[in-house]
Every structure is written in structure tokens, then in C-alpha cells.
Length: 284
Ligand SMILES: [Zn+2]
Figure (tube, rainbow, N blue to C red):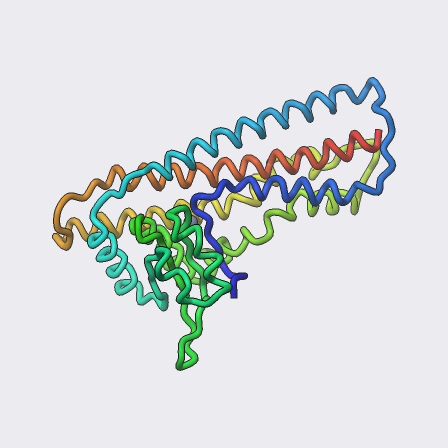
């Protein structure tokens, strides 16, 4: 049941980018390649530039990831859990929330234990819709955060709320499963009505289309964080939290997480353009 919404909050999402490129490479691996003619210099140069931008994006994304990893908790573990409880209650979420460490990572079985390993290490958190079936046959979602970083739960429950709303929000959540196919899909679509003399709309806008494909994910991620921050705000206002609450710390942590998604979107756009450049280069 690991094929539902999977979160990798800390993981650099450039897997998307390289997966897209790999798919494109595979697609053209059987095309005979010819030595580049002088008029393809521009294509080669564009390719190098894109590779450079891609490398820079990776660096910045890694930096954001490190900032997130080093981010402190904005409040006590008890407060984070209390806010999470309020989110679940107020939105009637059909979700099991759990805080994972190495002692309890095995409780959902061997398959999930593997997925929970980075969570136990404090490097990941996720929400999975309809992940579990309990003894009475009831299907429930699962939201997990590291025991050492319970504040991540608020963002994950933001996803759970988005999923519970159904419709467009749920659809936006699901699109991320397809993004690695985007560069190849654009190439295929482009090939359907390919005019060798004139580059068509898809080819000219491959970068923008690649980014657009990731936009629902970027927006849904942002909304999940906003829901988490708002729940923390509401709990503080209602006087439900003991001790200090540093909302700016929570916002900063979530901002760095969101940045990695934004950069991944740009990365996907670049991957899409690279796929077309590669094709152009091979065909020339
Ligand atoms: Zn998320």
C-alpha cells in the first residue's frame, strides 16, 4: 500500500529531474547519433547552460535541505502533538498519527519499516492516504513525523486535510506521481504532429510546460504548510499551549521545505527543455 501519496520532506527532489532525463535518454538510445554540425553549436551551448543551471539548482536545493535539517523545533513536543490532535479533531480526519523512532519503526510491518527508516532518523515525514486497514477492516490514512521533530506532523496533517477535501486538492496531490514522465510525454506529444521545419508549441514551451506540470505539487505543498501554521496560531490564541511558541521558526522551517519543491519544479522545466535539446542535437 505504498503507492499512495508519499512525502519526502527532506529529500532533494531532483530524482524527478534525473528520472525524466533518464527516460528521455532511454527513448533515444536507439537513435543513431551523428557528429554535430557547426550549426548545432548553439544547441550544444544551450545544453551546457541548462546543465549549469541544473547544477546550481541542485546546490541551492541541497542548501535549503540542510537549513531544514538544522531547523529547531518551534515549540515543545507536547504542544506540537496537541496542535496535531486539534487538526485531526476539527477536520474529522480518518488518519492515524504517529511519531517514529528506532524503537517503534517496525510496528507497521516490514514493508513500511523500510519507508519509516528515514523518519526514525529524523530525515523525513509523510502522509499516506488510505495506508492502513485496522482489525475491523476500516481503512485509515497514516501521517508520521520523527519523534525528534514532531512539528513536521502539522504539515503532514495539512496534506491529510487537503486529501479529505477531495476534488481538485486531491487531484493536485496525485499529480506528483506522474511528473517524472513529463519530459518524455512532451516529446511524444510533440512527435505526434512534428513539423521538421518549424518547432511547434510544445517544443518552444517545453520548459514552461515542465514547470507547469509540477505547479500543482508546489501549490499543494504550500497549502499544507499554511494549514499547519494556522493550526498552531489558533491553538496559541486559544491558550491551549503551555510555554513558548515561536511561530517564525515554524514558518522558516516550512519555507525551506517549500523552496525545495519550487526548485524541483524549475528542475523539471529544465529537464523538459534538455530532452528537446538532446533530440535536436541527435537529429542534426
Ligand atoms: Zn509535504
